[in-house]
Image 1: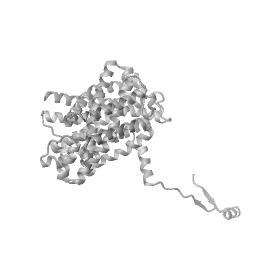
Image 2: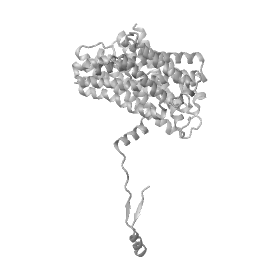
Image 3: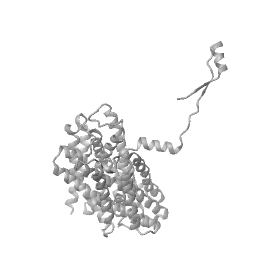
Image 4: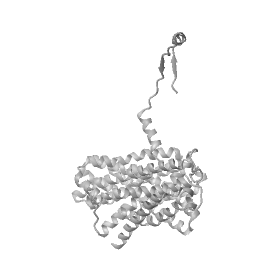
Length: 451
């Protein structure tokens, strides 16, 4: 509140002539740029933006880089195509958590057959563990590219850092770390402006879709869909809405206190679509950069995201390769804890264990045990000589196919009055949700028909 400083003499004058006293406004402290930035992050970057950023993990980067290297600008349209599909299905996932106060697996356990629950959670756990291993390997390769250190050392170090962040840092302190790591993805935007891009051709390919009716094309399309519309993102977004409720006393499950639900769900929509827009912009720039450099110079096969960074150096310069590598490391530090935690949320809710990143280690031992186990198994995978690009693309394809039955479950759940009460999704959102499910299913069918 501003203070008013009134001169005593002026007060006397007021009494005599009725004039207004001279008032001196109090000086307001200006917050620093860093404080303003931090305030902006706290107010505008929520579960949706973190989910969108974690989608562009090293395995996703490898998939997009392979798409750009192999097909050139021909796959740029997928970034535009997947944006509304991804936004709709992630909003529905977030609504389930925000309205019910429970994650997807908890709602599946309560309202649907156990076999459906265990199949969904089992597939989630397997795919996430494979992704964790591939992401840790890509991060280790990126460090080797920059420093020359043998990759197994940074792989172990990154696994330990990710476990420490998720297990020992309370959720309220952990979320700001995730928010700052989002900035690592801007490395790919900067890289695109470092290299030479034929923008006319690129923009034409973005708005005019093209897809050859071949196994390779459909396989890549499913891989892109699988790494953008992925089951672990559904589980993570829903669970983080629940975490937000637990972490803030003034929040509550909307099904119990629907007053103000319209405003809360609007905020969720804005946050979610902002996150998905950010994710797809980064996808666009990764495909763009590798198409303009690797594909244009005849390099059509890469094995990891770090390989893409290494291949950029002789073509686009050391700075471009460095930016690409830094992005791999930053996004890995963001994505690996998300992958491990989403698996732990799924398993923990399925088993009816206490779950949550805000919980004390000793009060949620099963939850944290799954999180650590998924990370450790992913780490061990890097010492068995698994072909990384086949693992990455294979996992992405599996995610794309597995997404279909899970999206059907999400649509049934979000439209069910027993689950959502009076806050079931609107007919318009139902329409777009089922359309998304049908399009992903058609892409999966197309993949099988070309095998």
